Image (tube, rainbow, N blue to C red):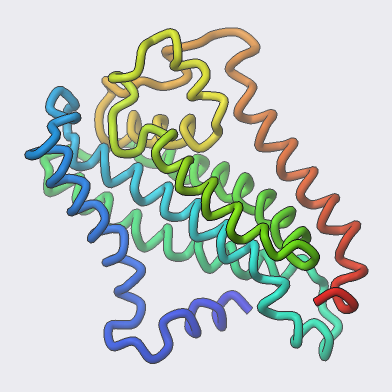
Length: 249
């Protein structure tokens, strides 16, 4: 199912799988020109180009995984009525295909980092657990949204608005250092911000503001507790509602 989802997505396009690389690169190029030459928000950030593309790629994965995952059950309603398969596989296959795109995009990030003069480091391997952390968070949201969307089709439009707001509220196009220090801990309530800043610290620059050099004590556990809670709640809600999918789709 993962293979089929990935192939169908680019079926009929001239450059096929390369769109998974070009989409984040196009967005990065536009943002880099705007925020380097027109509105120089990143002028004081070391390796700002790499810093920016990391944010674009990780947010792109989160947005793609949750959007496609949210519509997975409705999109495959006919398949589920004809074939007896575990319902959760439908959502997982969609989010896993987005994870493949993330892997391809991260190759571009590493190549870009090398071309920017950043020496390879064992710290780069931290992107693996960070990507897994983001995947679990996106999967939990996808389970909830896909089950809710079967009955409430407005979920699609609501989630689009929330993603748009999240893009600007997650310090993707501007460095978190521009935000007043007293507000940093509130930004790190979002697991996406914590993951993105950690990835930037590991790959782009050790001057990145991270949760680890901002807060201490029990507050450090909050993003992980949120991810675990969202994953568990999403799965339980999906499991409860899945028995009615065939009737409601």
